[in-house]
Image 1 (tube, rainbow, N blue to C red):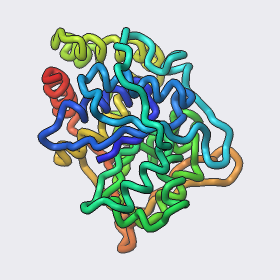
Image 2: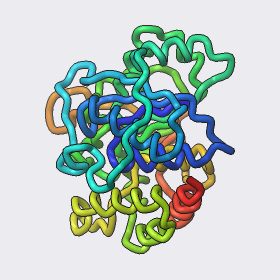
Image 3: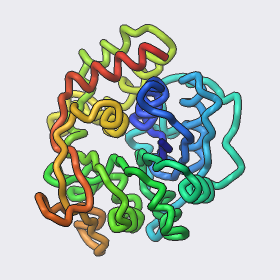
Image 4: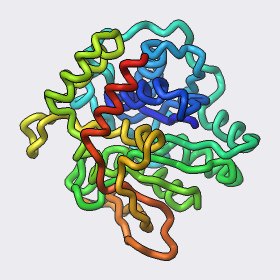
Length: 304
């Protein structure tokens, strides 16, 4: 698998969960994209999280610094100026690779002897750019599992749009239209996965550098959510992608045909779905066993 990401607190926890699960997941590389914060910060954050996980051998490739068409929108108001404000993360012992992430994706997916899973945790700019430049690489993608969209839950950056899609809806459109097998983790499911105080305390009880850093991440970012719209904790969005690949039985996943609204106006970047069609272009998770999800996270982080 290749993880495409824009860390981000929940991206960081997703990376830790993936790197803590070598029995199920082989992380080939991490590619970074602008999203929660600008590209220089998302790349630095990926390097620091990789160091925290004790995995400096995993290569990190720096990707696209702006969306395909729109101007970049970031989310420091949630994640802080660094993108992962709160914990003191270790300095990286190794930097990013010199090859651009899009070039890496094209070369790897073009030549892979077996299909690779793409885990897309941020805006889809890198993936769309690679598919546009080299459409034949779709044959090298076994599945694209992505945290994106919202069908019934409303938006989290506008009333209609989920952040990752809103930042680069044109890239989302490319990926949804690519014919690649898709699994979406929309806000409908991630909003159920709230890191309530008892769940945060269970992670704090791990009492390791990873456990303490994860606790500090969650305590920092919860300030934006708790008390807003009925949230009792930060909704842990991106780790749902990794949890699905470890144990898909945690999720209620349904087939559908998914699309994105590119028109200017209030619905720009919103996602739509038609369910139970013969020509579905993917599947989306609408339900989750929340307690088992957080138990999985705590169990795996304790192993790092």
